[in-house]
Image (cartoon, rainbow, N blue to C red; front, top):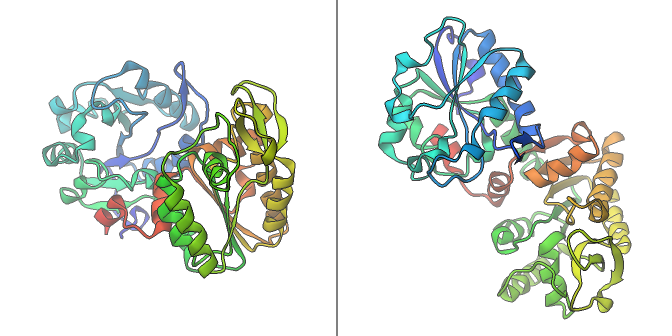
Length: 392
């Protein structure tokens, strides 16, 4: 895989730069800027080389239709302020764009194409769409590891038509994950949250033989609590996953990997409620499990304390309500404490988990923070990612 930093002649070259600027937007306001901050090094690198940069990204799921609420305009404006350079947002139909249309003014060095998912051809990995995009540039750079598990036109198909390179961030992400999967320091612990157990079953099964502890929290934890015979009330759960959970426990026994799940919880009657600590036997039909309880936190802290490597993907509860954010914060603080005395190697992945650590301003207190969720998990699962395969 060729990295763009090893390219000597980038002067005046038109670089099609695939980024992941899929940031959370609320009424047009960006609520978490982590993904924008992470792409600044590649922008600075290319502008210093006097390249002409054509940025491709998506926001949300417009499903192949123009949706003004999912415009890249606020992201464009945010990046402009950060790098103190003018950026032009081109909202013309991509199919009508020609190479000579892009940098008409000499002071134009960076242009944004409007949300690439406004075109259904992007998610269809359409050949002619990829070819048309390629005609706008001289070379292609993928610096969006978090999109690299998608076989989309601007991620995988495009490399067939342009000299293609890995960006600075993409290589950093892969190296950090390689460190976790190959240069492992035991004991190693994986904390995995989120709502769906079926989407993460592959990774759990794949990690059981390699890891010492797998801690399952969040909505996934509810499924295990239910499997163990407890009432989970109105809590989020996934149907028909008893067989999956049975397989997880059987595999963990065979591989001497400990599966840890909540032993007490915080509940509310609604998502906006105040929290109440409950033992598993006390959960009522009208209860919603929205965080892990104090005994579970202590158990997780002890496991982190005795680990040398920790991987964390998915919050412990409904952290958007401060009443149910404590579990996630305590996990974060426990890892940070070990990180400060360099007695643990920590990798955090996924947008929600990054949002949690941003709330306590702790991004710099982990060895590596990845904004990738799906790509992060699929890489660890051992899958070949289409975007990485295309670059190779």
